[in-house]
Length: 225
Image (cartoon, rainbow, N blue to C red; front, side, top):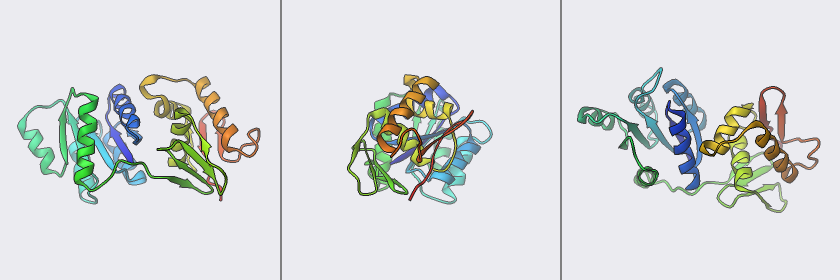
């Protein structure tokens, strides 16, 4: 189950992402309205947590654009308390509206509620890229017909993010932000995590064929049949 979190407050976005990951969601992020539409179009998330006050395009414009094409559940976040704004957001097709500040438990409950109303379930699906599969709910990877490979929580997050963006280069900063979020992380920690994951999924970790290092940029997962 993929959640797209859109907020220009990166600290809050990381906190929301961390909270949702603990509940089994796979989380992607955007920090302005135009980027939100691009991520929605590319990844088609199962639910959208969308701040109203965004640069480039505000949350109302993003909601309007998505509703013209799809019924993805949308939960709006805002500090605004005027009734007209709430009515406007719901009138554009938002499924719910949460005022900041809010508790993590409240947010999760609201997300689960809009998914139930939409007929969705919050159990993450098995992700498949070429011969490599990942059951993130069980933290298990598998290559072709091989045995299940147990992963740590951080390895699981890293592999899931790489698979979600297969055949694309991800910067080290983006990966650190996604994997560690509000917990923090750095490039050395990422290098060590990549090394441990390669040791588990690569036939020859010294000559990786799945997780590629792009010098000066970051990493990418190559889809292998």
